[in-house]
Image (tube, rainbow, N blue to C red; front, side, top):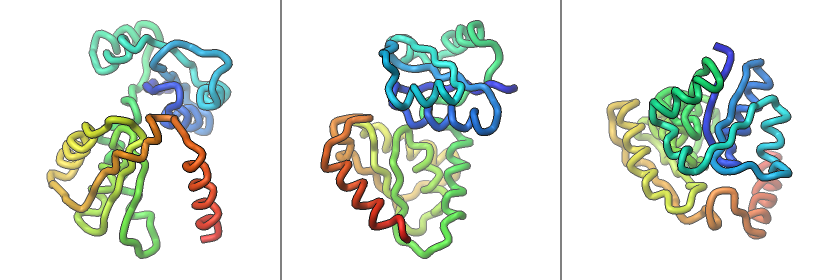
Length: 198
Protein backbone atom coordinates (compact mmCIF):
# COMPACT_ATOMS: atom_id res chain seq x y z
CA UNK A 1 0.00 0.00 0.00
CA UNK A 2 1.50 3.33 -1.09
CA UNK A 3 -1.02 5.82 0.29
CA UNK A 4 -1.59 7.07 3.82
CA UNK A 5 -4.76 8.98 4.73
CA UNK A 6 -5.20 10.94 7.92
CA UNK A 7 -7.26 13.69 9.54
CA UNK A 8 -6.63 17.11 11.00
CA UNK A 9 -7.52 20.76 11.27
CA UNK A 10 -6.13 23.50 9.08
CA UNK A 11 -3.23 24.13 11.50
CA UNK A 12 -2.49 20.51 12.34
CA UNK A 13 1.15 19.66 13.07
CA UNK A 14 0.20 16.05 12.35
CA UNK A 15 -1.01 16.93 8.83
CA UNK A 16 2.23 18.84 8.23
CA UNK A 17 4.44 16.02 9.54
CA UNK A 18 2.56 13.34 7.59
CA UNK A 19 2.92 15.30 4.34
CA UNK A 20 6.65 15.80 4.96
CA UNK A 21 7.15 12.11 5.78
CA UNK A 22 5.42 11.14 2.53
CA UNK A 23 7.66 13.56 0.65
CA UNK A 24 10.83 12.16 2.24
CA UNK A 25 9.98 8.47 2.06
CA UNK A 26 8.08 8.45 -1.22
CA UNK A 27 4.51 7.51 -0.33
CA UNK A 28 1.28 9.30 -1.21
CA UNK A 29 -0.57 11.27 1.46
CA UNK A 30 -4.14 12.45 1.75
CA UNK A 31 -5.24 14.93 4.42
CA UNK A 32 -8.90 15.10 5.38
CA UNK A 33 -9.21 18.65 6.68
CA UNK A 34 -11.94 19.84 9.05
CA UNK A 35 -13.77 22.87 7.64
CA UNK A 36 -13.92 24.81 4.42
CA UNK A 37 -11.08 25.82 2.14
CA UNK A 38 -9.69 29.31 2.76
CA UNK A 39 -7.39 30.93 0.22
CA UNK A 40 -4.61 31.75 0.32
CA UNK A 41 -3.63 28.61 2.20
CA UNK A 42 -2.14 29.04 5.65
CA UNK A 43 1.55 28.03 6.04
CA UNK A 44 0.65 24.55 7.35
CA UNK A 45 -1.54 23.60 4.39
CA UNK A 46 0.67 25.41 1.89
CA UNK A 47 3.64 23.29 3.00
CA UNK A 48 1.51 20.12 2.99
CA UNK A 49 0.42 20.64 -0.61
CA UNK A 50 3.97 21.51 -1.66
CA UNK A 51 5.11 18.23 -0.07
CA UNK A 52 2.58 16.48 -2.32
CA UNK A 53 -0.32 15.89 0.05
CA UNK A 54 -3.77 15.77 -1.53
CA UNK A 55 -6.05 17.95 0.60
CA UNK A 56 -9.76 17.14 0.92
CA UNK A 57 -12.02 19.41 2.96
CA UNK A 58 -15.07 18.11 4.82
CA UNK A 59 -17.69 19.92 6.85
CA UNK A 60 -17.35 19.94 10.62
CA UNK A 61 -20.44 17.73 10.79
CA UNK A 62 -18.89 15.13 8.47
CA UNK A 63 -15.54 15.40 10.25
CA UNK A 64 -17.18 14.17 13.46
CA UNK A 65 -17.94 10.93 11.58
CA UNK A 66 -14.24 10.23 11.01
CA UNK A 67 -14.36 6.99 13.04
CA UNK A 68 -17.57 5.66 11.52
CA UNK A 69 -17.21 2.72 9.08
CA UNK A 70 -19.70 4.23 6.60
CA UNK A 71 -17.72 7.47 6.39
CA UNK A 72 -14.43 5.61 5.96
CA UNK A 73 -16.00 3.47 3.23
CA UNK A 74 -16.98 6.65 1.35
CA UNK A 75 -13.37 7.79 1.58
CA UNK A 76 -12.26 4.45 0.07
CA UNK A 77 -14.75 4.92 -2.74
CA UNK A 78 -13.29 8.36 -3.43
CA UNK A 79 -9.58 7.67 -2.96
CA UNK A 80 -9.13 3.90 -3.38
CA UNK A 81 -6.91 1.87 -1.08
CA UNK A 82 -5.08 3.62 1.75
CA UNK A 83 -3.70 3.01 5.22
CA UNK A 84 -5.70 5.07 7.71
CA UNK A 85 -3.93 6.90 10.52
CA UNK A 86 -6.28 8.48 13.08
CA UNK A 87 -6.42 12.18 13.87
CA UNK A 88 -3.20 13.28 15.54
CA UNK A 89 -1.67 9.89 14.73
CA UNK A 90 -2.83 8.40 18.01
CA UNK A 91 -3.30 4.65 18.01
CA UNK A 92 -1.56 1.66 19.62
CA UNK A 93 1.43 1.97 17.28
CA UNK A 94 1.83 5.63 18.26
CA UNK A 95 1.95 4.71 21.93
CA UNK A 96 4.52 1.99 21.18
CA UNK A 97 6.61 4.49 19.22
CA UNK A 98 6.34 7.02 22.04
CA UNK A 99 7.93 4.54 24.46
CA UNK A 100 11.07 4.59 22.33
CA UNK A 101 11.61 8.30 23.03
CA UNK A 102 12.77 7.42 26.54
CA UNK A 103 15.41 4.99 25.24
CA UNK A 104 16.89 7.79 23.12
CA UNK A 105 17.48 10.15 26.07
CA UNK A 106 21.19 9.89 26.86
CA UNK A 107 21.37 12.35 29.77
CA UNK A 108 20.14 12.19 33.35
CA UNK A 109 16.79 13.90 33.77
CA UNK A 110 13.91 14.35 36.19
CA UNK A 111 11.10 15.37 33.82
CA UNK A 112 10.00 14.78 30.26
CA UNK A 113 7.74 17.55 28.97
CA UNK A 114 5.72 17.07 25.80
CA UNK A 115 3.12 19.02 23.88
CA UNK A 116 -0.13 17.11 23.81
CA UNK A 117 -2.83 17.13 21.13
CA UNK A 118 -4.50 13.72 21.06
CA UNK A 119 -2.40 12.04 23.76
CA UNK A 120 -0.51 9.33 21.88
CA UNK A 121 3.01 10.65 22.38
CA UNK A 122 2.47 11.44 26.05
CA UNK A 123 0.95 8.00 26.60
CA UNK A 124 4.02 6.39 25.07
CA UNK A 125 6.35 8.51 27.18
CA UNK A 126 4.47 7.47 30.34
CA UNK A 127 4.77 3.81 29.37
CA UNK A 128 8.44 4.24 28.48
CA UNK A 129 9.19 5.77 31.89
CA UNK A 130 7.56 2.74 33.53
CA UNK A 131 6.85 4.57 36.79
CA UNK A 132 10.23 6.30 37.02
CA UNK A 133 10.81 10.07 36.69
CA UNK A 134 7.88 12.36 35.75
CA UNK A 135 6.02 13.03 32.50
CA UNK A 136 4.28 16.37 31.97
CA UNK A 137 1.97 16.99 29.04
CA UNK A 138 0.98 20.49 27.95
CA UNK A 139 -2.32 20.51 26.11
CA UNK A 140 -2.49 22.52 22.89
CA UNK A 141 -6.29 22.36 23.04
CA UNK A 142 -8.78 24.47 24.93
CA UNK A 143 -11.16 22.48 27.14
CA UNK A 144 -9.11 19.29 26.90
CA UNK A 145 -9.84 17.72 30.28
CA UNK A 146 -11.08 14.65 28.35
CA UNK A 147 -7.42 13.91 27.54
CA UNK A 148 -6.79 12.65 31.07
CA UNK A 149 -9.12 9.69 30.63
CA UNK A 150 -7.99 9.09 27.04
CA UNK A 151 -4.35 8.92 28.14
CA UNK A 152 -5.17 6.62 31.06
CA UNK A 153 -6.92 4.34 28.56
CA UNK A 154 -4.03 4.31 26.06
CA UNK A 155 -1.51 3.62 28.83
CA UNK A 156 -3.60 0.80 30.33
CA UNK A 157 -4.16 -0.79 26.91
CA UNK A 158 -0.47 -0.69 26.01
CA UNK A 159 1.15 -1.60 29.33
CA UNK A 160 -1.68 -3.17 31.32
CA UNK A 161 -0.55 -0.83 34.12
CA UNK A 162 -1.65 2.43 35.70
CA UNK A 163 0.92 5.08 36.57
CA UNK A 164 0.70 8.18 38.73
CA UNK A 165 4.01 9.80 37.73
CA UNK A 166 2.43 12.05 35.10
CA UNK A 167 0.22 15.10 34.77
CA UNK A 168 -1.28 17.20 32.03
CA UNK A 169 -1.36 20.99 32.10
CA UNK A 170 -4.59 22.34 30.60
CA UNK A 171 -4.15 26.10 30.99
CA UNK A 172 -1.40 26.89 28.48
CA UNK A 173 -3.33 26.84 25.21
CA UNK A 174 -3.30 30.65 24.81
CA UNK A 175 -6.94 30.67 23.73
CA UNK A 176 -7.07 27.43 21.75
CA UNK A 177 -5.20 25.37 19.19
CA UNK A 178 -3.05 27.45 16.80
CA UNK A 179 -3.64 30.66 18.82
CA UNK A 180 -0.56 32.64 19.83
CA UNK A 181 0.23 35.65 21.97
CA UNK A 182 3.31 37.90 21.96
CA UNK A 183 4.51 36.61 25.35
CA UNK A 184 4.44 33.05 24.00
CA UNK A 185 6.66 33.98 21.04
CA UNK A 186 9.01 35.88 23.36
CA UNK A 187 9.28 32.84 25.65
CA UNK A 188 9.92 30.51 22.70
CA UNK A 189 12.75 32.69 21.42
CA UNK A 190 14.31 32.97 24.87
CA UNK A 191 14.04 29.20 25.40
CA UNK A 192 15.62 28.51 22.01
CA UNK A 193 18.48 30.91 22.76
CA UNK A 194 19.13 29.29 26.15
CA UNK A 195 19.00 25.72 24.93
CA UNK A 196 20.43 25.79 21.38
CA UNK A 197 24.01 25.61 22.61
CA UNK A 198 23.29 22.71 25.01
